Length: 488
Length: 95
Image (cartoon, rainbow over the protein chains, first blue to last red):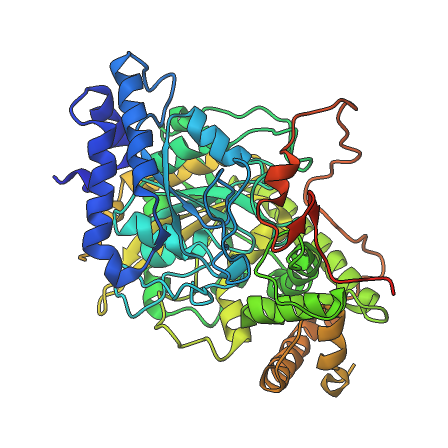
């Protein structure tokens, strides 16, 4: 087995046993990227010298006897979505507007990964400012799906999912505002978890929609993903929305049977619009859970159909405020004007891509005088109804089970002309962010021709990541899907 | 409201984004479609429902009023498009 083919968990075992060095692991990723990234374009930039330097430092610590109990990610190469602040490294959010920006500090997630010993390397592609579902909205060119480079990897964390599935790194950290971790994980055939709002600090993460954004890991297996979540979860005084509750040991809590566990099947999610092969894979997954001893119960989320509309009012409103900071004064590639007003307009007109402009303008509109109550406040009220649906459903069952996306990876360019159709690809993932709970996507099969991955989504109780990961792990370990790799 | 009321020039101006005439035409019509879709929310009676701003009810999160380390002014200015004498340079605001 080649080094890049190992799971994160297998790699740490080999690092601990001194069978491989961190430098070899890092080099294996760089070699893999050189071999395959030309066809998928997951990585935007890599500071090779810095990466190998971090790996050499990890090897020194390993030689001095530091264990993976002390630093669970010691020597493990991890890539980051281009939205995280890493000191002295670029953070472009796949936008032209940030120019040669370099972060003056490490964000909390980066700091925590460093404390866990990870080798943080590479900026992976995304939809500009995390706005999109296909990683086509990138000023640095689109990313291809490792299973078929002519298809999209999903988005907005498409670079993370593609890099993990193409085995270019041992894990990746993304963000999820309406499905941006789970949807690409499903379309690329890897695991991605969106933790509960407040579980992971957002300090040092460029904000899109502050009441919905959450950071989360993506990995080859549930165990890899749990290990990464262990490293990054927890309260942070520098993020006032992070919640001061204890963080369980997720990786340690994965084993054990799930007999008697109750899974709720939201009847509203299984109407029209699901590709037949996705439905078949999903139904087989439900049966698999039954054979593992889970009880399946139909539940209702009566306001599910309002999720996408609610989201596109609230997320764009918040984005219009958050992205006001990109004005060409403190950072950004400035386009001059005679006065500050024209400087702002010129800088933003030239720097933002079309989807970002569309969303900022929509968000500005729904917050503008005369429309604020009709759109923004109404959407906030519908959000209350959606959250109530989730609370009620999750009172009866331990988790909800749904497909992650109604279809498999679509062809590049297929939906770019029709933003509304693109927005609807998040139909199963979006309500989880509105309700603020946690969700995970795991591979649950493939379509036949072409062979494309299908994702299964599980939605858990707020701060119920441990239970959710355990339920996902039991399924994964009883099925062969996580062992399948894209031929690149 | 009817979609024709959507004044793309006016809203783009509020958002401080300069658009080309082609962008105005394309975005204006796409935003009309999207607004048509989100009208769906009018089907619901929400008169007795409280609006929700956040999923996790945390209020008045304060920290002790103590000086904490932060980045230096040099670091803060490092990404500035224009700077002089330790300050950001902007076009003249007051005549």
